[in-house]
Amino acid sequence: MPSDAKAHQVRQAIAELGADAAIHRLGRNDLLDRRFMRLAKRRWFSRCLADSTGRELTHGKTLIGALALSRWIRKRCPDQDMVGLLLPASAGGAVTNIAVLLAGKVPVNLNFTAGREAMASAIEQCGIKTILSSRVFIKKAGIEKAPGTIYIEKVAKEITSLQKGLATVIFSSGSTGTPKGVMLSHGSIISNLESVAQVYWVSNQDCMMGVLPFFHCFGFTITLWFPLLSGFPVVYHPNPLDAKTIGELTKKYRATFLLSTPTFLGNYARKCTPEQFASLRYVIVGAEKLRASLAEQFREKFDLAPQEGYGCTEMAPVVAVNSPSVKGSRQAAHKQGTVGHPLPAVAAKVVDLESSERLGPNEEGLLFVKGPNCMQGYLGRPDKTREVLVDGWYETGDVALIDDEGFLRITDRLSRFSKIGGEMVPHVKIEETVSELLGTESCAVTAVADERKGERIVVLYEHESTTSAELWERLAGTELPKLWLPKREHSLRVEEIPLLGSGKLDLARLRSLASEMLEPGREEGRAADRVARWVSSSTP
Image (tube, helix red, strand yellow):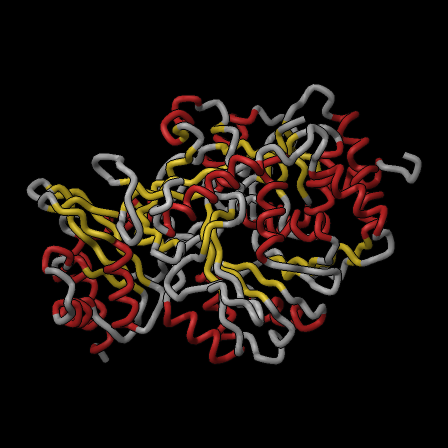
């Protein structure tokens, strides 16, 4: 490079070289299941898995159970490339994922919160003929049994004591439409785990509190395979909203590592005690923006700052993360309001939204990332794959900037902008203002079609004591541009903000709900209902 190169140019060149070099580290037989087998043989009698049912397994028992089940899978599904899994985050769910890989098949963890249509689409796209599930789980979750479902309880009775590139397909959240099957190789996931391990140093004295479902890429990579390949135990609980049980398990197993979403973290901040979370060393949040008010609330109560990270299913999934500062180090490890530095072996760049020209530090544009953890493509969708993979770079669809210290700041999702009167209006910035006004995280911004301006902003929120009119008056008094403000009647109070099973906003349902509530005649109907209730309550 020229002698007058700027710091950010040198940093970018090194990051891209690192991403390219990391691809050459992996051997042909460097597979997730093989790595776990080697580690389990070394740590045979140490604790590996536990869950909220009280089940506990050593590495040895985990491997034996997975090998036995893998033989059954090979015999039962000889001509099937992929096997569906409909299981909660649990010891049994983890063993089954290992077993499917050991059988030479691809495990596909089905999103049981996405609804019948989305799950049927995933099954059809993958050509799944066999689904492994649990009779107890199906009953508790109220899920309709799909064709080809086999219960693990039945399989266990058939197994006696005597007895490759693609690692998984993870379906995108489908928050904006039909979920896409993201094909992740063993190398993608192993590379991502090795990068995470360079930032977060762990030992066999650590313990993961696993609350994310395995159909969530952060759950599959970090709460399933990170502990399995790093040699420290993990305890699972299938319901990430059950703060009481999660607090109790964290205390019982002295968990040190918690990965969550801001939605779930807010629940823990309210309901868990400092004694329950006293053992935690690392709390990492991702999947949606961590608001400063929530971060401060958690830090004050537990004396531990949650570290915000960023990722996407297509990158297996971690791209960047903040981390606690190392004592004696001059290197800044975290910065408030950012998602940290890109991981080792991951490179990021920001380009202009219109010209696609690469931008400099602190300039906002479209984010591209690359590294050995990048997906192989979308299952059966080469057209969609070509749209997002350009010369080895993945187009994230997120609007971001990289500051002059190399920290990545996500400012919005490209799909979460509305074009009103020719101007791009960011939903997230409006949400942040509403959240500050109401003192609650339970709010969301969407848009509906408008013949004159293209789109109209709609605010939905949960807050019993604030009326729509009051919220609009307070919004009008902020510094938000007038173009960004919803109409008075477009601030809608709802019983519940629609969320996906991952804790992220269900953007498709959000837009649909806003449209339903703003249908002609709905406002008159709501007014009539209010009058009827008032008359009823006033009648002796």
